[in-house]
Image (cartoon, rainbow, N blue to C red; front, side, top):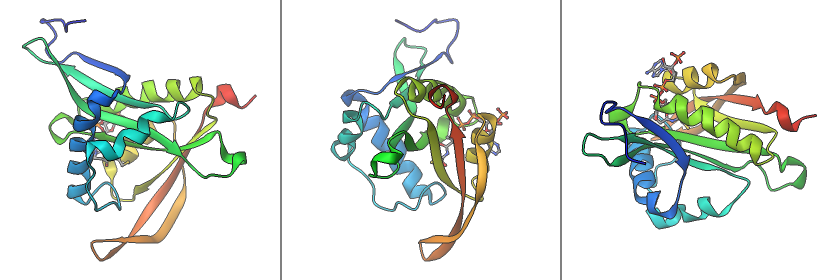
Length: 179
Ligand SMILES: CC(C)(COP(=O)(O)OP(=O)(O)OC[C@H]1O[C@@H](n2cnc3c(N)ncnc32)[C@H](O)[C@@H]1OP(=O)(O)O)[C@@H](O)C(=O)NCCC(=O)NCCS
């Protein structure tokens, strides 16, 4: 469906496809280079991320903005990943969420998270967990807004660029799958 020309900032969220991998990698690599989002330092090629799309229990969504020319541009993504290999943790997923620098602070992360929580419930997951740098104010605000609980802080969890970093552990129960 073409975006409404009267709403140039139209936003939609949908499941990711293989065609989105170059955009997903570009946005991820921007976050990796920033040194503010993740301990990862190795940039990823689109092909390296294709395995993300092969796990039905772990949703991957993209957010697209409708441009004035009528096309849609991927401006952010959110992806679940297995928490631990042990069977007892099968309903627990970790996740990452990245919005392109030019699109931040305008509700994209929030739209992704709202759709993601629903998709994860539909996939049968019962808990989402993540670790966030303590000084990542945007991520902590996003998570708080969407009902995540800050469990505690792992001190000096790992080094990034030679500096020990603390991370906040967060969790959110997905109630529908806990009865
Ligand atoms: C974290 C991130 C995904 C948030 O996405 P976003 O589209 O900028 O966030 P939104 O505009 O939807 O805002 C979500 C909430 O965070 C708040 N927020 C956004 N940026 C903020 C900032 N820099 N400081 C404080 N709060 C901020 C918003 O006010 C909003 O809260 P509210 O609903 O209570 O008003 C985005 O900043 C990002 O991609 N950062 C780099 C990658 C990263 O750090 N990912 C998380 C690690 S996995």
